[in-house]
Image 1: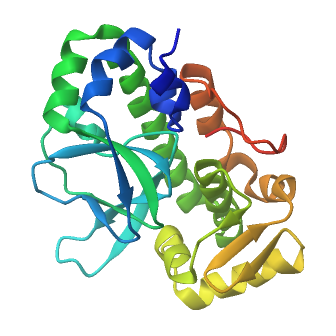
Image 2 (image 1 turned 45 degrees about the vertical axis):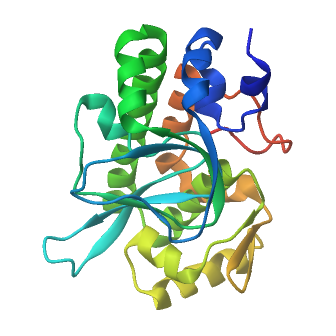
Length: 249
């Protein structure tokens, strides 16, 4: 049975681990507030802390060798954790992860998490299932980038952001959408207008409002849904959003 603390956590990954495993980890969890643009994982620097997000949205970004080009390869919300490369015994990564929006998290030292996970098989199993789900998500990002147009990719990223933020009102700027999609801001603006014209979203300054989720799902088509179903199959979602049209990440 979940402890009182575990029953209150908003991070779905922490909520899914066995109560005994959570009890071992709980003394090492610290509640922290995170600001927009705050760096959580620095590229090529040994990781100190892992964050289980409770709110907000973090982006994992790949950067070219000389830093001239970058693109978001995935994002993390209340369904997961940052710095999961440490679960493979890797202390640093060429990717960096930072907060796209302000939020909150439960933070634990990376060394503590890896030590507990090494001796706690149920905890390790759940965490590695999350890594598997993230890898599936990355593969569908590659599929989307290679086989789907900008409009379809934008619909997918908006759905993924809504899943992780748990809200119809998304604090997403055109600058962020440009990074997500790997296109110029002018291209993003055009595609946002297309979705607005179809009455699927409403864009205001620094924010996107989802009006018709099912309509976005139809546009995103085959590049959205399978990774989300895999997460639900392997980890589950203790608390789904109130809107029955929303799906758990």
